[in-house]
Amino acid sequence: MDIRDALRLSDEHNLDLVEIAPNATPPVCRLMNYGKYKYEQSKREKESRKNQKVIEVKELRVTPTTDVHDLEFKTNRAKEFLSRGNKVKFSVLFRGREIVHSHLGQEILTGIAEKLSEVADLERAPKLEGRNMVMILAPKQ
Image (cartoon, helix red, strand yellow):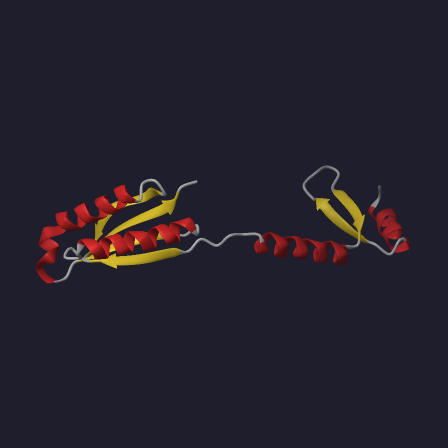
């Protein structure tokens, strides 16, 4: 259809002539109410954002000298966070000369990962980043 005829037809029906596929030969156009189309599209986007689940990363910090009971308490808190669908980031903070004994932090984090293995997957293995050793756990799917 000729462009002039398409424009005349759109004016007769009080609609907009919208180019759908400009690279096609011949270009594809459509008669539509463009304002209504944009409104419905924004409503669909808003609805999809409402149904989206936001995953938070909760951080729990320990030191190489953290006692057994405190570690159990922190693993229980991590279970709660994981059951809610959040990721958990464990950080072992090394102060002063504790950094020399980084293997202690590694042992603590692997022990925590083993305790939480039934409810969590290891997303990022324990890794030393400066004076912190970091491990990230994600809830099992």
